[in-house]
Image (tube, rainbow, N blue to C red; front, side, top):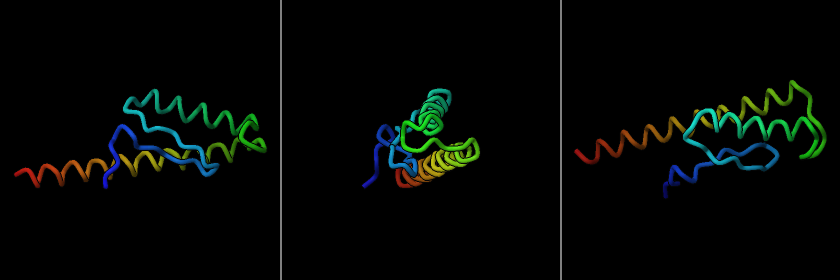
Length: 82
């Protein structure tokens, strides 16, 4: 069963889920807010800047993977409709 695009999420290793937003600026802001929580220690021990960079990169990688999967599904649907 496919997940509707409006419900796609990325998951941080802390377990928090961030809804995938279609607007790049909004998605970036959502990630930065989450990373700030890690840096401030709201989600446990404060993390270092290096750790925050790693977490940010992992979330961005997940976004690219989801976007790639979504594009593949779109292409498959187009092929099926021919």
